[in-house]
Length: 249
Image (cartoon, rainbow, N blue to C red):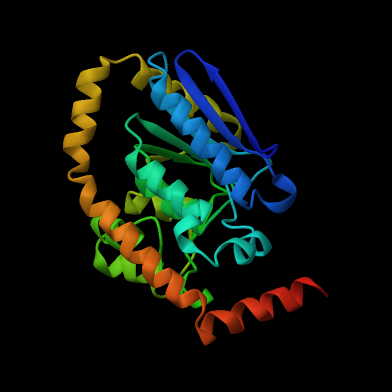
């Protein structure tokens, strides 16, 4: 487990808190593994009816920790981030996200796998993969057009334009924008309501709404293959070398 992921359970709801606020909750391999373990435990526990994911310290997550990312993506088949997005895509219980501050990269794409998403007015979303010389992940190249339409998905994934909480609500990426001091309370109330419903009927409804998960997994794997190819491209290398050079100054 990672010291930067806190897991708690109350009233049939597991809460996963991303807790690395000094780095805007940037994710390392150990943090991904801790979240996978928490999802595994929640799914295996019949007493758990829903899971909440949120970030501490005024950020959801800035995405991958770049140094850790560069050190661990030489073999995409064992990349913890890929294992995480596959796990969240296969998770069988309701997921509720509470977003404050930045939700960048996987911090934004994971939201397409959540059943309910609530955000504060300070939430900022961005999927900057193309700007990094990469391609989208977590099935976003499939799920974003389905969620918001091809034109808006092009703005998100090809122009890599950031968008705020109000825009996210208008697009249907989040369910509602709520004040920061109410965010976790709203998420817990909604998750608690889901956890209290008849489990089998809820699970069946969720499966029907989401359709064939094989399509999503196939897209995640196709993205991962292209992502791996892009990682060793001259374009991506130039971007990351420039980033690491700036970070050392």
